[in-house]
Length: 195
Image (cartoon, rainbow, N blue to C red; front, side, top):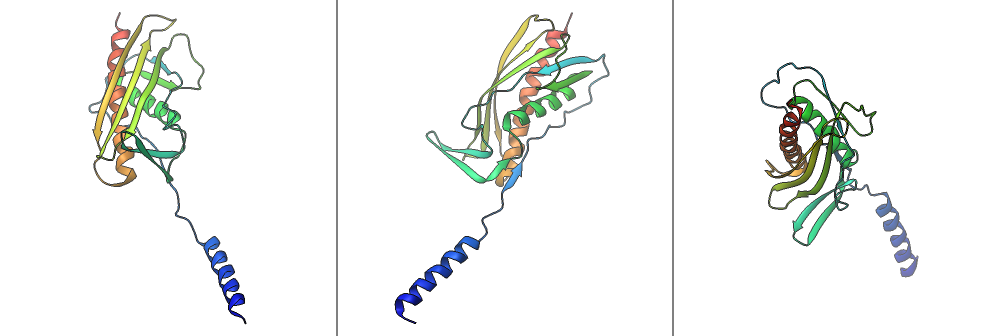
């Protein structure tokens, strides 16, 4: 076998082996509600509907995005959200609000909206995971009384430390930050419910 044939055969074998190499397995993550301290008292049912949540386009993707500095981000192809981020945020806020408002029956978009439901709008301005070990969540929200009644608006900015390495700790910090947002929305909703 000539030197060229050996080189050609070696190149083909290496190419085939490289194609058969396995890539790292993807991991999938999901946000979760945070258990509220204390149990709410029993109350009459109150309907609350969360409108479609908006998130920045930068993080509106399957991959988890981490901010490296003011001008750079990292998009991890192998660390992914298990479902779209805006649906997760809506689902988790609904569960967090249900724990914090006695009698609340909370649904998130898409749902059949009852005209007697309080409406919650959520616009996520920032959903940052920083290299310095914190997550930052900035949310503009509003609570509107039933039948297009009075609207109470607010903004919540949360800086939550990441308690450990890896994406598990990062996602848990985002879940705790969302619980803080739910706490502020719950205060406004209870205020709107007063006669």
